[in-house]
Image (cartoon, rainbow, N blue to C red; front, side):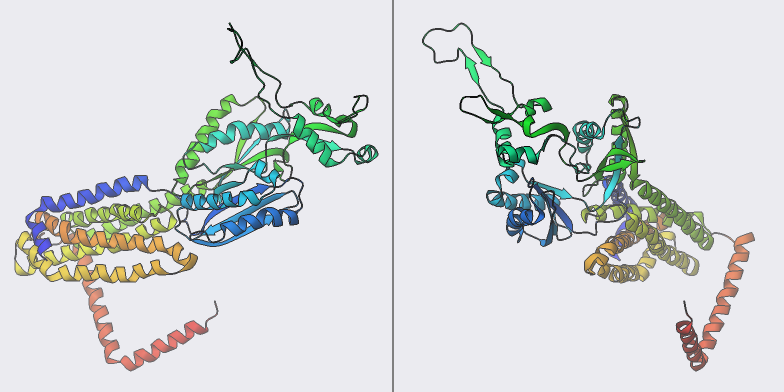
Amino acid sequence: MNISHFCIDRPIFASVISIVITLAGAVAMVNLPVAQYPDITPVQISVSATYPGASAEVVAQNVAAPIEQQVNGADDLIYMSSTSSSTGLMTMTAFFEIGTDPSLAQVDVQNRVNLALPQLPESVQAQGVSVQKKSSAFMMIISIHSPGDRYDATYVANYASIYVLDAIKRIPGAGQASIFGTPDYAMRIWLKPDRMAALGITVADIQQAVANQNQQFAVGGIGQSPTGREVQQSFAVTTRGRLTEPHEFEDIIIRASSSGSAIVRLKDVGRAELGQKDYSIRSFFQGKPATTLAVYQQPGANALEVSKAVRETLAEMKKTFPQGIEYHIAMDTTAFTRASIETVVHTFFEALLLVVLVVFLFLQSLRATLIPILAVPIAIVGTAVGMTALGFSINMLTLFGMVLAIGIVVDDAIVVIEAVEHNMAKLGLSAKDAAKKAMDEVGGALVAIVLVLCAVFVPVAFIPGITGQLYKQFAITIAISVVISGLVALTLSPALAALLLKPAHGEKRGFFKWFEASFARMTGGYTRMVSLVIKRSGIALVLFVVIGCLGVATPL
């Protein structure tokens, strides 16, 4: 191969190619996202709205239906589903094709929801419609509670919503964090139906009175222009804003006579109390009320780094928590991910060590063994460049593919070394001439090896559905490492062989002499057995069929 001859004559050029591949792979590997498994589920966009006091049927007809009509037909939309509850909550989830940009999908859904807003009831418009990217699984579950019951559940939930949740959302990769339920404070008004019936007051009358008398007004100022004469000073007029205390709500006037002699206040037909906005979801920790906060991993984020940042943020915020409030990380999926990745990394180095030992055992030369020791890391680390370009992550399947690739990519370097060793031993050539002749002999075979392995693994990427997505990264990772290994075998390996290998290693002694003799005997025995099978092919075929039938008939 001309490229091989060029690299043999210019080993520095071959070294630079491998160094560039290794450095690029190292940089890419540091920046690759880390997750337990690749993304195999469709992109999800969640739309939620609240229609206070409405039944599930009313919510479905007046809120869900208009939104679904507008969202239907969005780019790359697969399907969507919505649920409407008797508490007035509507939640719709739109599922998009795998690989769709979540941010673009969210913008598309948001624009379509805006078209549906004029068709929604006024109370729904007033509270707004939320459109968010949704993750399919929790990354962390955090419980915030008051162990000594110093604070009630409402206070803890409100504190977590105002301080803890906002701090966690600012962490890169954890922007989808949320609290189960609605932790906001709300003034709840409890009515007495018998008193309302006796006075002829309806719920609509009370709702209108509260809305009219609980508002924020801009009053203006004193001494503002234009004035009839010069004004020395001007004053901004401030008034009391929205009501905040229960007794202030209870003093709201529901109805009054023209003379003002007969006034009906809210406290005459009910009472007000400060509570949570929504009680549909309640969470407990160790049997006591608590606020549960869920952290979702955003697409492309490093799960291990996000988990570490969340833990550090909580530990720092713990110093400013009110006395009597504690937090506890109830679930952290990254613990399993971290343990799994550590196990795979250990397996990676164990496999690399075994490969080195086996290569040294058969080549019986440190110089010859050094070549595959250098070639394997280049191919494995360089694979990260292709993973970054294709949007892969470091996960269980890609790491598993790298582990398997160790035994595959080492073959290319061994083929080159064996060919060079053969030419030096049998033909008496120098290392440089032997390397050139070896590449003329095995260069085409190396390219064929790469193409055959790619033909085996690349088609896996085209398997449809979740199965294809699950094994795509595994197969493509191996294919990328094989391609880089082939490039290294055509450039660096022959250049190193020309520089490092010696024409002879001397007579074998000790263990290596015994190993070669034993291996030669085993090879001779295998050769005789194959010759016998070829001569008695009919009997061998019958035995093969019998063994196959026994295997099928044997119950598992």
